[in-house]
Image 1: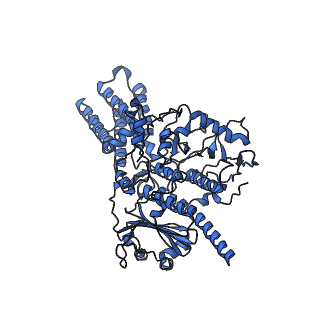
Image 2 (image 1 turned 60 degrees about the vertical axis):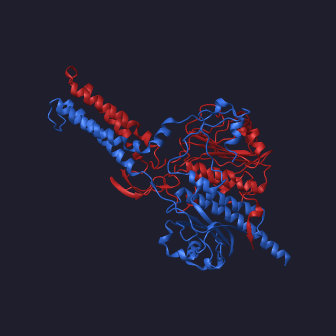
Image 3 (image 1 turned 30 degrees about the horizontal axis):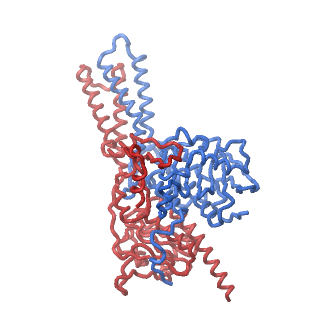
Amino acid sequence: MFLSAPTKKTFLPSMEAGIALLRDFLPSDSRRLRLRRRPSPAFPRSIRASSSPLGQYRGPQPKRDLVADWVADNDGFVRSLPIYVGGSSLLAVLFNRTVSGIAPVADASSAQSRADLLTLGLAVTNVLAGLVWLSIRPKPISVVEPLGVECRRIRSDLPESVVSELLWVWESLSTVTCCRSLAIIYDGHCIMQIGMAAKSSANDGEAEDVDANKLMQGSLYQGIINSRAQSYLANLSLYPGRSELPFLPFNTQAVILQPLGDKGVAVIGGDTIRGFTTSDQTWITYIGEKLDAALAKYVNDSSILMQERV
Amino acid sequence: MFICHMHWYKTGSSRGHLPWKRTLRKQRGRGKSAIFSLNASIRPHLSPPFRAERNTKRSRISARLGSDSETTSNERQLNLSVLRFTFGISGLDESYLPRWIGYGFGSLLLLNHFVGSDLANITPAQLRTEVLGLSLAAFSIILPYLGKFLPGAGPGNQVTLPEGNEQLFVMSESLSDTLKENLAWATYVLLRNTNTIAVLISIRGELCIRGYWRTPDDVSKGHVLDWFEEQIQKIGLSDLKDTLYFTQSPDFGFRELLPNGTRSLLVQPLLQVSDQEEYEMGRNEGFVVLFSSMSYAYSDKDRAWIKAVANKFTGRKGRNPPDAVEMYF
């Protein structure tokens, strides 16, 4: 992609040294990008940007944040550091006491004892802080590659604006979240089916069709339309409603069902158990509202057109 | 005159549960800009039902087992059950507890040294302990600062709205209706979903500005857009090609444009991917600037989403050309 090649050509050699470019989430190839998103943070906290060759940008550049980078790189060490510091100070205090010949009695009578007690308190605080840090270490969860076929189906009678909106939704979701399949049902039809889909048993090699009517009669859809709230099935294998989504690859791990107004639903399939974070869920809600607005406008326009024709 | 019928026009940025005195601004559109009147009330019912509060309900002094999936996480790392020490007082950030203990015990140690002990006969043992204690106190004080950078660190701070800013929502009149709608939605979503207090989007020279800004008093309401354009010209944001993320306050350059109390800043240029020559010439198609009152406000995931929202305006038609799409009726 254009990221590295042109910039090298047009840069002054002095600027190239030691500059880290932000690897933008350009949806060039979702699979390639997925490999890049490893558990360890691949992005520095603050990015030193490269100035354009014509030097027009006159604003400030962000400074490199050494502490943040160091902590991010030595994650395990930093987490257990307070425990070691606290534990060794604890031992040091006791050692100091025995070496100086003072009985290790915990009373506040002498200045020495008071100082020791305060130091012990600090050591214990550090140990506890270290334990908390260790316990909040995020757990890596493995990706399960969905088994199926790639498909890319969009209704042919949609106007350009709606199609570009739908494609934008797919690109955003597939780039930023763990979404691998997307199906949008609106107004009784399946408008878009994109990403990985289950292999159909009827046509060999083709993706399974989305039976919109069957889906709309199922309990999942009814539940969502009634509650008008997003439904997050974090571990799809645990839900009996799985059978209502036959068009998704059978090893889809997580599904979000986002209602689009009261006329449709977006089915978003992911490849990791609990792979959609809370912030993903809020973003998907807003995107769902936007999509509903765009599709409702289209349906209104087309129904007006139909009426005019009649 | 653009008619606002979408709800995302009417709501101001209603982050934070602090009561904030805001003025309702009603202006007539004049010249290049049309300023929309804003609803000054906070509308908590608009937030989606599952949106996790920043300060979750806590119980009494106890270690509590609970799920913590709201904190920032990498793509494939999730925060699940977490043992957290908490006092049960809402609004109190316990991750700063080591710092307070460090200050408190450190001052007690000094007090003990000067007041509590016989200054003439201080034993070397006591001095050793005090040195150890003071260095531990110093370490405890910087502990929360280090902990901030660890993934899975404590709950995010509530976004505070600094004083001295006024709510603003301005758009260039010469934008098309669909573009105005998209911009209104995008600014609304960015203000609500990220730790942003002010957002500025520029597409091919047309501006959309929303949030809490600090415009100089001598700039009249009709000329606000001109003032913004002037500032942008001075900084030269139109020629930026790379994303800039200032985790701490940028110290110069942006000063006049910054709302009061800005601590981090993100500039996301909109780049036309297909146009190789335009890219090399150094111009971008537009940019999105986000201002936040917190430092380190935008995590990797936030930045990815911001890039996705910005891609809405780049005019790219998707990865594959339309004729490669398999259509069915």
